[in-house]
Amino acid sequence: MMRCKPVISSLAFATFLMGGAAPVAVASSSDDAQIRALRLEMAEMRKEMMGQITTLKSRLARTETSARKQDRMSSASARNVHAGHREIASGPVDPTVQFNEPTSISSRIHLANAGTPTSDRGDVTSWKAFRAATKSDENVHVGGMVVGFPKGRFTVASEDGAYGLSIGLAFHEDFGGFFNSGPRPGEARGAFNSFTTNMRRLRIPFSFRYKNWVAAVTPDFGANHNDGYVGLYEGNLNYTGLHNTILTVGYFQPRVTEEDSESSNDFFTLERPSITDMVRNIAAGDARFSVGALHYEKRWWIAGYFTGQEWGHRNASDMGSTYYGGGNGNTMDSQTGAMLRVAGRPVATKDWDVHTGISSISSFRQACNAANANATSCSRSTSFGQRPEFDIGEANLSATGGISNAAQVWAAGPELGVRWKRLIVKGEYYHVGVQRNGPGLKSAGFQGWYGSAAYTLFGNPRMYNEKEGAFGAPGVSENQEFDPARNHWGALEVVGHYSVIDLNSRLNDAYAKNVIRGGQQTVWTGGLNWYPNRHFRFMLDYSHFIVSRSEQATNIYGRTGNSIAARVQAGF
Image: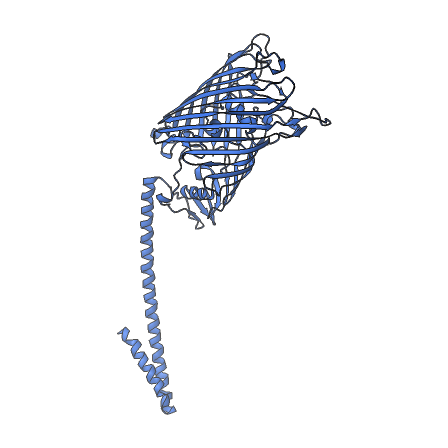
């Protein structure tokens, strides 16, 4: 019946129009009646249409509610299977805050170091990798911004990842002491504390990003061998738009040697082996001005940098300190140098990794320092010295003293490492040369090597880190984190290394200025590392050291001793 009404209304309306030719008296009486009828018809039609719209809206709302419920059930099922995201409900819901939608497994980034400690450096990755990491980790969307912890580091980014700010932490507090390490009669005791502490590292890495451009700034509130110094670990600009390549300029730590390529959060023991620490400081080390690049693939890694002075090295206020090797306010000509490291991975399987490589470094021109501010000439020199691999402010036992007329300093050597399932064995050897100029002066040569091993008792074992060209730390997956109630204990590994550094050169030379007696130092170290989760680590090392006599007042006749050291570590 209702469907007929529009037709009847049309006919009535047509009749009304045709009636316009009738006499005015007749039209006047019939017009009012037809207009009233038309108005009634239009009201009926409007009412019917509104009812149909309401019905359609109700059906659409029910359909959307059902679809949302189904999506939530599917998402919850996916989260239970993959443990990728967690929903947190607490109090009223703010419509401006949304947790990210579950990302399909195929689009997620699969990190080789998932569950491992974060880096102690600024997070320098490509824009593509940064966006993928941001999407794959739990994050919160707030007013067009993304707030989350990609790879365990606090990050705020724009929705498209073009702008980003990351803030991290590398916290290393060391404590312990020496025993049975006293001097022989006639020797100085030295700063070998029976118990003391040192904030070995307290770095706060900041990374400022715009697409593929990244500025990394990392102040260090534990920048010396003793508490109380504040310094800069890095301050550099990076471009990451080329495939697996990072271009860098600024104060930086160029990666030379396998050991130095590892983050300090990943070390086997508290300190690097002596030879690698000695080699890296020739023309690299922390906060060294650098211009260069690194490139990595699954099977190989290469990096090269031109380098200059260390940060603060021309600061007169540091002339009497050991701050980054000691500052000098009378430097007339700063140091220049370079380094090159090439590494390969000929075997890469589930159970096996084989690492080979070579590192080389050179100071083309040593810094030329004047005796005072009024001097008209300067001299170039160098020196080497190493503590017994426990850095709490103790004195060097093995040290060359100043080596005058040092024109150039260089070092080179091979790297080798093998992983078999949960076991890693690695080692490196380096020869160090000092070219000297002057009548009767000959070049000086030193050497050193180490061998290390680590076995993961439980937790995820150490794996190869392609980006660093080195081995990473053990990992702790979220379902392995320390929780005694569930019989979860994190990860535990046992480690050890044997380290030798020989700082003697031309001991039998007839010319006294060519004779350098720095001593030979041997250190045996064993320890345990426990990781309750990816962000925290507890380390315990025992070391025994043997050092032949040198020219140091603390080591005239040779010296032996022992140390016990512990570290509490946090990394974000």
